[in-house]
Length: 363
Ligand SMILES: Nc1nc2c(ncn2[C@@H]2O[C@H](COP(=O)(O)OP(=O)(O)OP(=O)(O)O)[C@@H](O)[C@H]2O)c(=O)[nH]1
Ligand SMILES: [Zn+2]
Image (cartoon, rainbow, N blue to C red):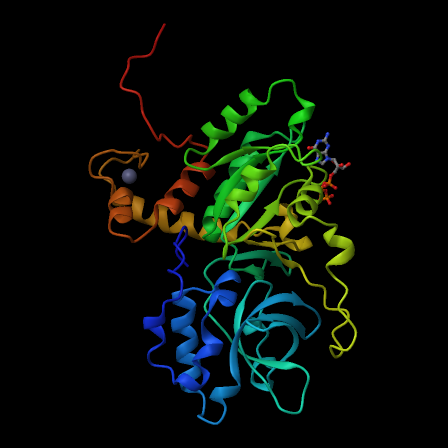
């Protein structure tokens, strides 16, 4: 997965031409776009569709995983929310099973109230955690576009830790944003905001009082229609308060109870929400707790950069502009992304030298 990869353009009618009119309607439209459907997903879904036998094709539809239980799923389709189980072919391989945020192809069966998930579409971004004592990774959320890293004045304001969050988010392929909450607890939030801005140039920063709602409209504007956001940060920084403010309700109390009559999935908690005014918000406990994140994804990216760096002209190359830098050349060639390099610099503790001053140091 290429870090920082842009999502595909919104679905266009042109890309539907190979579908027969009979069921093309299932595969495009504003409702799917609002759930995060893209051209890239659409193309991948077409491959699945065309690999299916013609009698099955009309019963297939794209859906997004909005809740995961034990072998049960809650899916969002263009028609609304439905329960689902895995198709038999998918049950054997635990590694190929859908996670929160995944886009899947599902089949509607005439004799069942539940859809059957038949394929998971390629993930644009992934967040994983280490399991088995760090021996393997478990993907917990897919297709998050933006991660709001929440902090607050005081003890929680720890720049090196926040820098690691930024690096981890970049490594996942998502875009980070830094959010200073509880601005009411400091007389002047500006110096803190300036520090956040300097920590990660190019990463947007927001000032917020989630309790009063001051600054909320700026955060809201960052959640664009069709884009999926997630909140991370320490316990107590105000993630729940912000979530409730964004959703305009108490999500924890109203979001997770499935109405009766939808099969056996009453215990499948939904943790993907549509934000009024546009955008989606993932809120699952595993994702919230950055401490469980697997740093391996970042480490893997670092290894690649370190390998490439062996070809730099200077042995002590910092990969920030030296002539003959193999790493910067690799970025130019698209071998690694600028975001990966940024994550590398952040993890190495080197401030990313975005704009080096040519002025001599003052004394
Ligand atoms: N003064 C002040 N308090 C806030 C603000 N936002 C949230 N709080 C309070 O901070 C406390 C913790 O907020 P939560 O929203 O539960 O924090 P959280 O990040 O969801 O915590 P976990 O659920 O443990 O991860 C609550 O008492 C909130 O009312 C704010 O902007 N200013
Ligand atoms: Zn170099």
